[in-house]
Image (cartoon, rainbow, N blue to C red; front, side):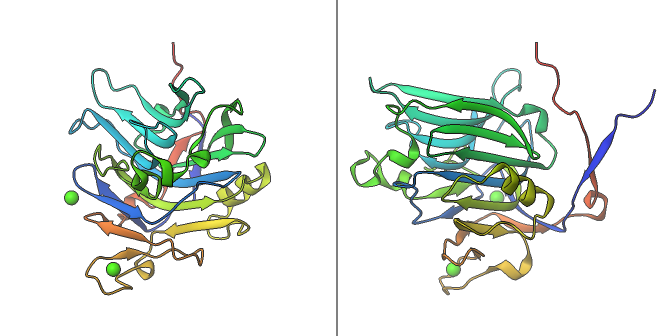
Length: 268
Ligand SMILES: [Ca+2]
Ligand SMILES: [Ca+2]
């Protein structure tokens, strides 16, 4: 049998590793309320399955449990381990919770470039490795995390932080490595997304609000409070505070990771 075609994702030496037990990184205060658009770009390695918790939720802002508007990734660690889902959660006019979800289970245990994008004409998109995989139009009467005022939220702090490796109440930890996190206050164009994917060190800058890149130069205690910061390269001081997570040097064998061009299993 011939081997499946492969393509090589540009590789890198370091990653911010969250162990799925008690590690996380938090950007706080950080508020997306009032933005008309958003793009959340990540280059991550989700380890899966893991079973320490019933659920893992990570790369999150908002309150999924009480007010609802939020976005995060969720691994369902119960039963048969088939879900690793990008969530965009809204509050419907009748006060119930609504979901826009995409299952990227096929991209567990590999590096994956993941984009959540919401435009001012309310198009929501998920991109994986520079390809659009999911899109939906969110009705204007459904409240998104961009439209939920922290000051009137039930738990304001959940709308004032972005949490890596755990949820916005610092539980449901996920075993995951981060290489890049970038958050923009605008919808990147398709070309912008392709550029950032192909040129990870030369991202488009317009609207860039958070830019974390895993490298020893960018991890230091800049405010002398005894807690390391993951330095924000966007210039907006949206540094991540590092709780237990650690910058790790990737082994030589992982310097080149080959991923099949087609990695998603056929879902029946
Ligand atoms: Ca730990
Ligand atoms: Ca510090």
